[in-house]
Image (cartoon, one colour):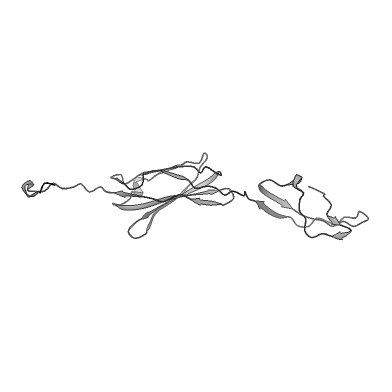
Length: 173
């Protein structure tokens, strides 16, 4: 597109649309302009400006795999696992784990890497407490577009049940 003259009957054109055959692809671009007169004299180029063309289709949401929805577990350091989006290429994921009772954001992990992992293991130092949680994953692509997964819940329960002292007091079901 370099040096494409932009004029209309000798008049200055402020707006320019590329013909369909010269359509730009998705990505970042740098542009600048310079003036030229009918005698062929050209001025200096303007300062450069930038723009980014983003895809018409946004990234889709990741699909949660584990822990399954509604599961009870005694594991205070669960492994969170998900499938990547079916549309778009994620650059990172954000795993959010919230306590169900009070909405406290218990875990907010940015997941990055090359290749980009689709799982996150809670470490011993960050072990979760016994309670019910909600979790989801947000995918972000290179252009900053995001998509949130559905939300799932799980409960951590490490309290061992007690046996009644006098079994004769237990009423059969």
